[in-house]
Length: 479
Ligand code: NAP
Image (cartoon, rainbow, N blue to C red):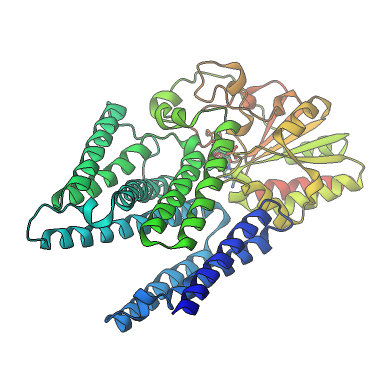
């Protein structure tokens, strides 16, 4: 038995090391793929070890336990395999939101099972004075309840985030007095959490989980469109924390370490993303950027000036420097390969081409980097916002392809804009700006973009891939 225990704990240690080393490798695009394989191997190891845990194999329900685990792996793994294979790059954030939510839900379910078990055992006591905390111990009860509330909020909140990103829920929903309602629900949920601790009743447990579910929904509903990445990242961190807490409840070292790793990495990412948008996390929750009221702050901007692809191609072919700013629309159009082809043609003509990536361009962190890497764009051509912003004034053409909010100058100049304060790419400072988009609509935040009406901006209307192709033809025609 001693050797078995040693084997289990040793495997958890190896799995934890694989998680940490895997995460470390994910910090660079060069090693990221290997990092995912390592972390995945850690997860496989931690899952396999579960089959050797004494509570699983030595109990009278051994066969049922093992069958249930296999069925769960088949359903969860099978679903993830199929959806992971066919998901489009543009739908990735929705998928991440959904998987986050499932993790939170799983942690909350563990807590629910432990609390229900303790309730049943406490109720069996003939004196009737034993509470859940007496059964589980106060540390375990507190962590079980904390993990339950965080996991449940992350579960229902992530589902709302998924629905919003997938266009199934109106992005501009804001209930009247939403924040006051949220505060009341939060206080009542905490009240039931305290009641669970001091009682052996089923009712507070049911009320607690029900209200925590509602709280997750209410917290996420008012979050504005432009802030969705921050909220998804925050739910990711919360799920990690909930898993860590429930790992303590179950005495499972792998869960504790994996939970802490996800929780701390997620918190750091949330902080960095909020910083990239110059917003505090509390502001993300309470400001509601992109909601109807906020977006309505825009007024008349003037005329957009059009350019044809042939003229745009000529402008770029004779430029000294072109900076390409990709955004969500490039992902929708799958234009990255054509853009790389265009870049190579321009390079052959002696034009310096750089790519400028805003930290929240696209619909998830690193979205643009992944797309450009997939198309073969070398990393040394890709610049972060703070490294390239000073270079726009030396640039002949800024080609904005499918980007909108991340180049919106009202974020700097208009204190009444809902985007005010968010750092942006200074495309407007270039000699010429060419914007590729399909129509005159706004970006994800729903805020009008004065860049499109600026004197030095020309609009090249059309699908991103088609426009990139036409630019290639135009440059090629020049010989
Ligand atoms: P954006 O503000 O959403 O603008 C995308 C632009 O692409 C739109 O102007 C759209 O205009 C155009 N477009 C769409 N399909 C196109 C196509 N097939 N061909 C050409 N153009 C197309 O995108 P962004 O500048 O990348 O900004 C990202 C926004 O998303 C920010 O508000 C950010 O906060 C938010 N967000 C980011 C993340 C993240 O983690 N990075 C996650 C969720 C949300 P038309 O419709 O006129 O074509």
